[in-house]
Length: 397
Image (cartoon, rainbow, N blue to C red):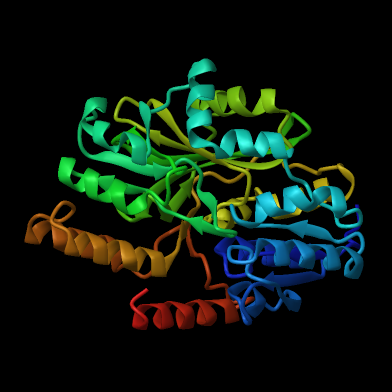
């Protein structure tokens, strides 16, 4: 298949957007980067041919949807690639009116099924997939927190990553409560209104892992897997150092038990925690690209190019496998990880622990490890990322 149609990559400040722009550009696709601000990270890439600024989808979803409609006429037959939990559902809702743009996304119903984290918990139990014990809490049930009898730490997460409140979309992160007082405080801070619900979840100690898949209307086409070596925050979050690994049989089987019956279409990010016994526990599923996408691309699992092919005409030239043992390091995120570990005695209780954390961080290069932003063939994004990081630090984040 010849790449003739352009691609419009939304959420241009995301790391996944940069990986997508580089991937598609190297495959001969003219890439347009769009974001709600000027000069987003992915626009710094030499593969970005043009940039667009759209209304903030979090603050003005209706204006963003109107912008999508205008894009439909301006870029006929372009492949549209949303990158976040805010833009994906808006694109899905607008899809019936986007008659000329091309996408490869799951159905709105399938998307909502996995995005409702409590619904996913129930679905996982029905499918005999290991999932941490979970309970719902709202303002009405705050007085019953202790009745759930979780051991600490307790994971507190929104039922949906992105929630509509007063016409705007609020995105919240996962937090951890170390005792009853902290749990009460976190729940009080996170609950938005009377309709909002949070999940209390059993904490699973172990290593983060991911299984990433590409589907064509329920047909699995390709899978990739990685393990997280370090994360931000250290208790669990986004990967800052990860490694490509062979497909884990049980985790892959569990991922398919959820995705296959949903007739999934497009990419899926299936996150697990692997305990000391090697058992994978399902944490969440996302219908979008993931932060450490560049590791997959570097390992021969070029998901952006595969998804582009799927959106264009459904014919996908999937590879037979991928390289095992590659590592990807997000240096700025790893710096945040180091700071958090040095600051908090839970991670580095003694001087020797602190020195150990520094020793892990300091080596500038390790075999089979690449830096996420720094690519000599496309160096500008690394400087753009550093400028953004310093500006964010000076603002106090």
